[in-house]
Length: 403
Image (cartoon, rainbow, N blue to C red; front, side, top):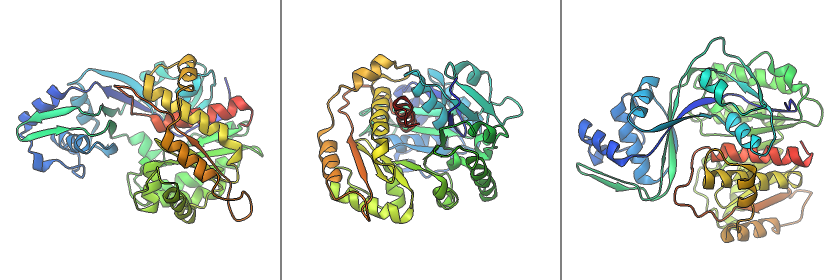
């Protein structure tokens, strides 16, 4: 067991369905769904609503996360497909990725059941704030580029591979913090925080943020606090998290979608000048000590600890790429093989330009950028890539002795 790496704050039970256009086409006919109805903005109160939103996501080739009014909707829809039961949540998927390299950790969970006990990675300890077993599954729908749904007046093909998540998860919305967390952090060298994005009540969020600040104060000197941002179910609450925690976070990490949400504009990820402008805009909004941004073309760190975490960026890219190519159950050998793939040429150009953009130190923060890899696979795994990046990042730091 490794009690020096503590990852929180909540995990999930996931139903990962196998894509089947015929099932969806049958539902289009059963519910008499029309092309004009397709929208990602529809509130998901019924299975019909779920299908309407899902097809809109597929049509546009984009991913997302949607709230459903009850877990029964998820159960009903998932039962129509071949499915696998897996574990999700940033901390748990990160731990699973780390375990592939022999790195174990301690997890903080807010829900527990027999699926969780059976599937948690071997050697990882856990604490849990739940007082009883519950199961509130997250529906994970992955689709490949070019999948087609044709029924009634609907005829669509997905322009890009992606994934959608549907869930109603009260334990993660409440995100109760275990009394065991503070004492555990007294021995930790890394504390990874994620999960505030699911909270919908402002008072609950304020209480949990105050509690986490208290627990973070238990960390020994020199410990690293890593925060992974996510799409918030209630817009604007991400700024509450920023305001309460930015001064105690060492690494404030996000993906390209969250970057663009903060700066409120599209960012051309292959244009180094546009990326640098976006980073300057982001720094004015999120004044973090060190910011990490991970994207499909490159990953970067900017700030006080940027030079220290280059190995983390490489590890994160390699780990997420391995999951994208291999899927669940990848091994250390898979990781080593993927690490030898060629770098993305566009990402390499951006990385070179950004790293040579100016002097280090003084008013110009240090910036380290690592290109992503060229990944050519017919059936990629698109779920959990950000979580897996986090696992690769922390594992690389732990193996290198920084964490």
